[in-house]
Image 1 (tube, rainbow, N blue to C red):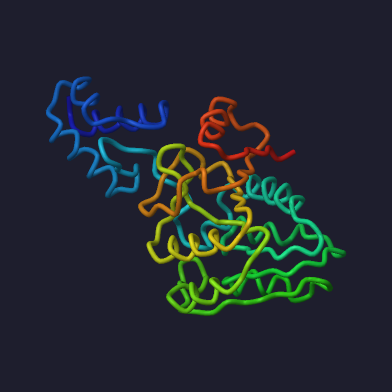
Image 2 (cartoon, helix red, strand yellow):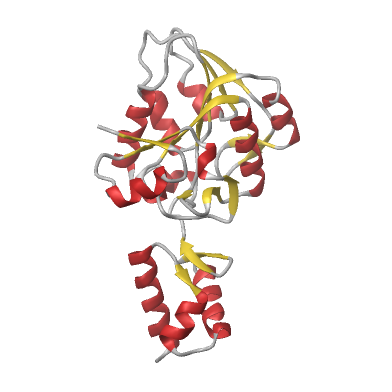
Length: 252
């Protein structure tokens, strides 16, 4: 069998099963584990999968530029964002991560909602400038242009002084085993800092993020209090997510 044929079959199996194991693949294709590891390295370099210990998981499709991600799974983002906005109560202190899904979230905040929003995203802050009753605290730091958010030690230090009710965390990958992941190391650190300072962490799980992984782990899935998914999300997927201890809420 040609290398490309084998790699194509690996990707088919990955899409079907949600993960592949190197040892099982070597037996299946009657090749060495070194050959399989080389296949997985090549596929990972092409952005086709995310290598993990012993095998691979589907790669997140949510790692493109901010502008490109704005149109990726937009309908899905809108549905989960609308549901997420309904989880916010009057008077709360709400931390909102940067990202295209959380950008949709702020569009659904009602005009009579009086809360304090803490964010390290200039875009989120600007989107709330004309909101009559929302106080905005903008946290600074070094601008990470890929996600248009502040990162670094100054950002994490500022976050440590705040105690919030909710944190809406942006991620690029959500997987029962790999947990909550993202594509940048410093971003992962900032997201963990936010999560530690909130009573509840909520993840808006648009379709392209579920059962995928990115290189940097933010936290185990159980770190999230609530995961908002689409109504049509496969029940087997929902069950696997709930087994980690997170509450799964379906968008209407």
